[in-house]
Length: 316
Ligand code: UDP
Image 1 (spheres, rainbow, N blue to C red):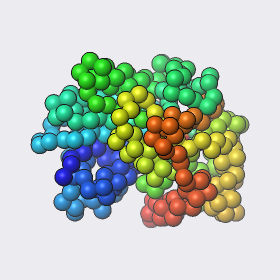
Image 2: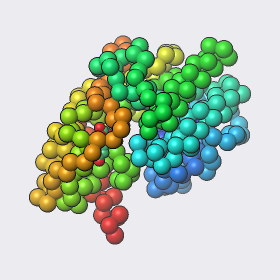
Image 3: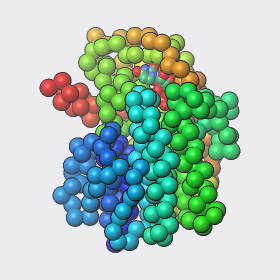
């Protein structure tokens, strides 16, 4: 049985990846310090003998007994309000955490995949974003703690690849959604859906003309799995190419949830908010034969029951 270490295993993406690797017949070692993750996301895995959980902060030295085939580094606060609240921890997990895990991968002879982000492109001047675009990032702005940690993470990972010959993979993840997102993590999709369910105002930042492209979690997990199993060491964008403005997305959510009390509520635009974002996925199509299969309409339909339940629990 092959062994995979997944950091951030109690988080949104980490828990879905844990499910996938268990389903593929792996033994999964999940690690999380639970500052933004939740044991609720992996409660169903805890009784399984193929799943082991370590409550640990990977910014400190990481010890894992026995052999490891793969390491997937997904630990990090990932929403703008989270990394504004936890700027130092965000910087540390992307930098020191990555260094610790690269060292572990080297010691174990494991292949390491890191979760990078469309945020490496910052407020992009190239649209859609291709992997060879270097980005437009403000290092000292509010998003700098996340963006620069992830950029350093890519640089460090590439250095271990070229200098130590470590097998590494870099996925640049664009906005992703699905069950197990925290309803109050501040990100637009959980915010709008939970506001609509409660019959509140949907907090549209600025005039809502900024765009995003939302990928359903199962599509993302498939792309990550294929990348890990490929022999491609350069960064690869994984995301959905269906771009929508935030104002149109708010209207779509109002329609989907159908609560007559819900309405639009315009708020100031946060500093350094990227104006556009859409992945160019030509590379993923070519090297991974991957593209998203689940439309936003279908993905939202699959996600809504989770949010209805989460809002109900939160109110109760
Ligand atoms: N946004 C919004 N209302 C909210 C939360 C976010 O209008 O309550 C906007 C935000 O300004 C950004 C987009 O939605 O333009 C996506 O924000 P999110 O925090 O989900 O992630 P980002 O893609 O900016 O990292």
